[in-house]
Length: 291
Image (cartoon, rainbow, N blue to C red; front, side):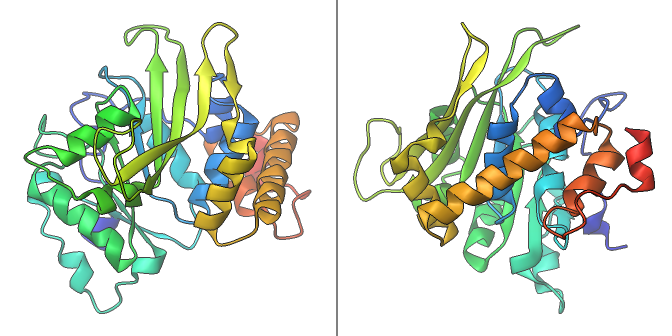
């Protein structure tokens, strides 16, 4: 196995890695609902780059990102970056295939040598223009904070490359020690814009709010169902708004069926997700007995 296909310091400084979760366990915990997860699945299924952000440590950023990676196309190669030791030699490999590769960094920060920072983040965003997709996490409370950090020294990522990030998921956590309530507090799509926008701290990139969590009702406001948001998503996906809406609805129904069938463990979830759209969605595998 290539060294880049093996996670490198993925869980950071933890003496023991957190217990991994499946996307179904994330839904079961109330961190997201099936509609929101269907949206994220439809975007990651089309190779959207993604960043999971939260301000406090131990908020579940890496756990969330790890679970969401089960929603990317199954034929995707995963390249795990090596923090301060990264040389990006993998782009020079004869069989390098940007259109079928996700470049993954466990965290974008200067806290540890196994995390990505400085010029290596700038280089990672350059890869977007070659067709690579990227996934990572960051300490940031809002999407505006994410944009501002990427724009500032020593990163100085150009606005048009920040806009290529596509999907930013901000997490809310009530308590980082002991039992905690975690929610996908806001989900935004980033898009380029030609002028300054009041919703963004950086000219040239604009966040489009797709979902927000209502703390008072503990429910998710699916803004992505609004016609304007669906039009933007469909344009990004290269399809009609109706085709986009139909695809998200199919994925939501499939997740609800998985939920009804009691599919929750990581192996069972991966098996069920891999069968989506193959015509044998009702069949069960041995993994399904381990849910």
